[in-house]
Length: 165
Image 1 (cartoon, rainbow, N blue to C red):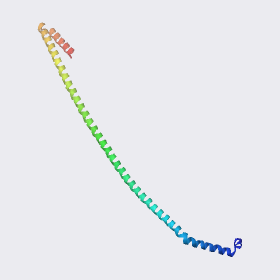
Image 2: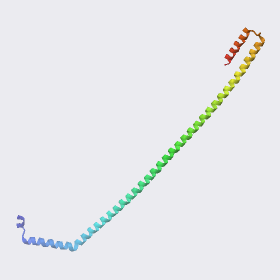
Image 3: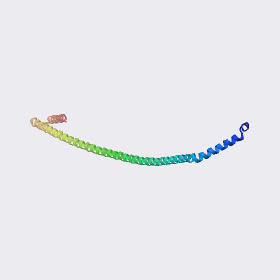
């Protein structure tokens, strides 16, 4: 309240008149400029926001495009991996088949070798038996035929066969 007592009516009137005069001058000379600057600033901001939104949309499109490319590459990589796995299985099957065939060939060769060896041993055994039989026949012819002599000849024949076997 004391503040109002210190001010006179003339000062208050001068202050009010100055304020309205300043308001009129600002409105007449500066207000349009200031509003124009503010409008330009508002328009610039809206344009920049529009550009930002456009950029966001473009980034979203690029992201979607890259994600689709990545998924396509991933699918292609998986297909290549599956193809390699299948080729590996085929090679494995071929190797097993080849190993089986080689094993069969080895078994066949071994059987043929055994047959050959058995035949060879049988021939040698036949030759020895013939030699023993000839030796026995020679002994029989040279010795007299008696029961004791016959027994001795047979025993010698058995011993010769045992030696050969």
